[in-house]
Length: 351
Ligand code: KG4
Ligand code: ZN
Image: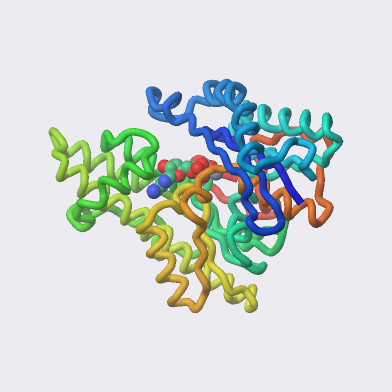
């Protein structure tokens, strides 16, 4: 089985050819629009949509060439159907529908978050149910993945996502965009203990997240300095990264307890999404999992950030179960994995 996966929901234009037999990833091409957004210090949705239009065709061609196949060899076409920046999602969905229609192939609309969630099964044999910490630029959630299309949300953020916090923190420190990798780099030489920054939500009941107070604390610390020396920036970056990781860890500890109670057969903690590229976070979660006698799975960094392989793989998992979509599927800017989750109150609640 060969599935083309298309990802255009944010600032990566990506396509991959994925198989249900080894090697699973046959072709995988990611075009990062970073340089087009960098002058603006963040992603500009209209620029992203136009850039997807410009780059998607050659990206798909290269993915097929890497896999050494043509459109005629495909069994299905999958594209991110949401959630995300709607202009970009429309570009990917329309392209996938056109290929599917022209070739008479099934079309599969994949929830971007399901793509991140199932990446663990693309790289290894992780059994359902597993506990997932999904941390990216747009999302910050703890979920139990019970099966394909079956999710139970244990916690979400009441304001910013973890990646968003990294990005905003980097901006305050003058470290540029994207913030996560920049903060991680600066933090390497910093002293995380010099500035006392809060660990948001730590010790509170439940598994929800909040990062806006931490961002304010960082801003106040920055404003106290007339000019920031490289030493100060490194120490602030280290303290800020530590605070985010400790907050994520505290929430995950609560989630592990709930997971244990609700799913005695569950054996694995998985981390996914762009922030899962962070080495210090991976280490912290690995030791947490070990302490709780859980296996720990973190996909390779290139599969944590947005890519087409995760969409192609989710397509394969869906195709196996006969979960295909019709060509009248409408792209969805919002698309929660667990529609039954209790709504949380907060400033800018993410679905
Ligand atoms: O999953 P992703 O590529 O896109 C979304 O779906 O949001 O995640 C991008 C996010 C950005 O906020 C970026 O700053 C963050 O992931 N990120 C990191 C690291 N690499 C990327 N955050 C912390 N440490 C990193 N090394
Ligand atoms: Zn993502």
